[in-house]
Length: 262
Image 1: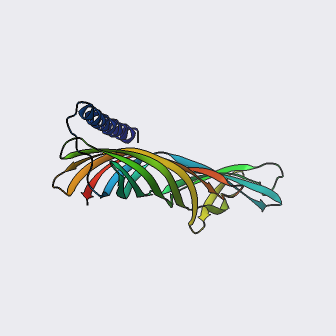
Image 2 (image 1 turned 90 degrees about the horizontal axis):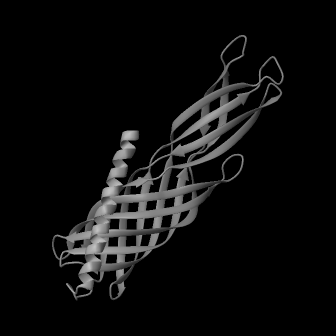
Image 3 (image 1 turned 180 degrees about the vertical axis):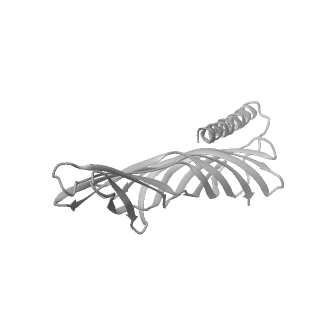
């Protein structure tokens, strides 16, 4: 896991370095008058695959009456980054300015760690501890990102675009609805958790923002390839057991894909 994290950090740092170089090229080229023509396409379409870096977590709590006492369970949901799919569309509205919208879809199973305090079957006020884990709970984020984008042609083939705006998020998340303890045997000083049942996945919505940069190389007049880096983020309220929780969504995204202009 540490090696994977270091690899993703190196990829992210390299991507940012490429974009910083591209922005410096664009700024320097314009300052020196290397190009004079504005961006003249009517718009663009992008299709990408990338990696989203970002951890998320929230907690639930459950209780049930067992042996005339209350059993309590604390449930921590958590997940990390993974691959995502991305599509975007932009239309030029004035000079080098475009307005666009992009959709990102990220799906990666999350985990739930259950810690329980279960009453003793023979003695009052002698709770026993137990734990359980699940790694197969659904977690899916869909972000709709509205953007104002400034497109800077560096050469006839290379374009650098910078943009950002508000985002709307939809999150599909599985929640734990019940926990079942299991007695290990006499003298019943130990107990286990045999299952933690998840409800049908439900969807929740929230808002946030996005900002990023894209570098495109046009192979033909209308088709090309590009790399991008962007920050996306937001917050979604999840009505978890024990009280609503704030779930952070999005993260740093980078990737590569196809570009088409029209």
